[in-house]
Length: 451
Image (cartoon, rainbow, N blue to C red; front, side, top):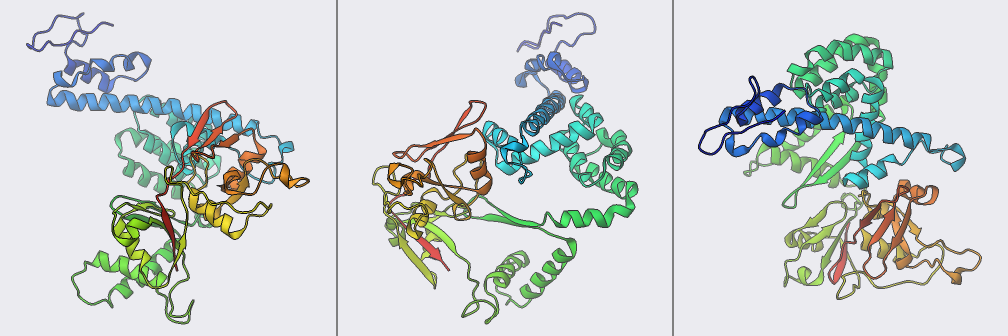
């Protein structure tokens, strides 16, 4: 198929009868065509400068259909990767006690995703490929988007295969004309119709997933989220609203008061419930340069688990009542911590503080588990028969690894090396791909523990 586009003088050569000629005509054609390799090759004909307002909407639809086609191919690849990992997890490797495989590490590193996001992508792909091939076909044809297909897998996740297939059959015919929100609502209604007696069983299963997480955002702010049963959420809302109602009318909005009320209820507990004075015994580690601390510099600080915060926020924590300061020595050029401790198999408390402050998180590239929740792993194994022969318990030979990635290092063919000069950790996957995890250089710093 050959295409001829409009020149800038709005003239066009004539194509074969019935074939699209102008950019607008190609956009209209591709907006309704079944996507695939041949139609994807024509997307370059959708020149922005040659499209009318109507043509741009058609071009947008054409690109979206092809995005869905690409995502369908990814779904199938991800399902294959998960299947390969499951088949390559022999019980004799000692993994029988851990219901894990490590496919998500390959995916997370390759696509630069977090481990949780990669695991979610794999789980959705496996469910779609294994239980909902018709949904995948609609995605491949560009008739639905990936978020709709994902909703099918997620909403039916606690159903048995027969009930899940019933739900898919009930919802699928209308999905091409629905938004993502409409699809989710239709799926939830269909689940109740397909398995009304299983609602309580499904609820008990989902209760096991209750959790809290946070995400750092811009300008020193964060999103703090809880996934919990509806009755608890309603009680939490009521308690926050009631406490917020006790605040003075001081110019704060209702939402501002509710946030302040939640913080007050959690952190400033009534006297006698936790520690003297009633304040929660929480530890908030911040790493800040000495110059910033004394106000002669405005370099950002690091708040463990969240990332950079402003110099003003760091000083607010530093000079709050009850703050404990710990001094850390860093290299003047690299910013890496340089103090070491005597070598023993079990790290001393000071060595633990050193490595935790230096690395801040698990040193696997896709992992953000805070270092204080990780194991300290010997990069070169400790020699129990002859401790002086190598594998010393000192910061250059230690790094924090969460329990999952600790097992990955010792029970799979993943390998890691750490450059003692730069602090960069290089991981090599069984496939031969390598991924680096750069350190977080610290200026000459004082670690602050806020209790």
